[in-house]
Amino acid sequence: MEPILSPRLVEFGLTPMQIGWFFVIQPVTYIISAVGVLYVPEAIEKRVVIIVGAWAAALSFLFVGPSAIMGFPDSVLYCGIGMALVGLFNPVGIVMGLPEMEEASLA
Image 1 (cartoon, rainbow, N blue to C red):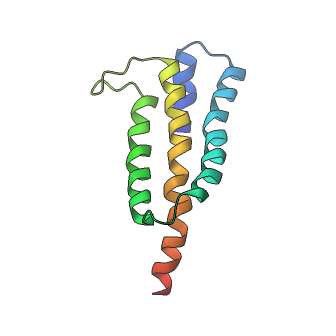
Image 2 (cartoon, one colour; image 1 turned 60 degrees about the vertical axis):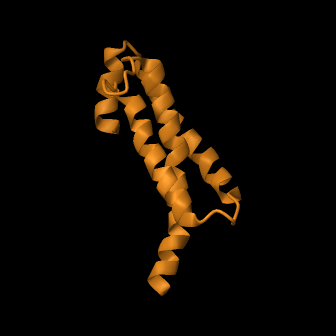
């Protein structure tokens, strides 16, 4: 996403400093989510959380690029919301998936 995002943001008239701050959105929300995902109750099966997180992350990408299918406007606001959502949902699959991969490899 990063190689094409910067030229896309230039089309919106953002300055290089604003584009740099735009790239901070995803890592910041990723850190918050990675810490928060540790508190998912044990009663919820890990695989369910991983699948839901993967689908939510995939749908988040529809916000980043204008989605004609979903009717989202071509807006820098929607692009920023998409970056935040991608940062929130990616750790769900990764943080929850690592123990699952470890269990599968030891079985």
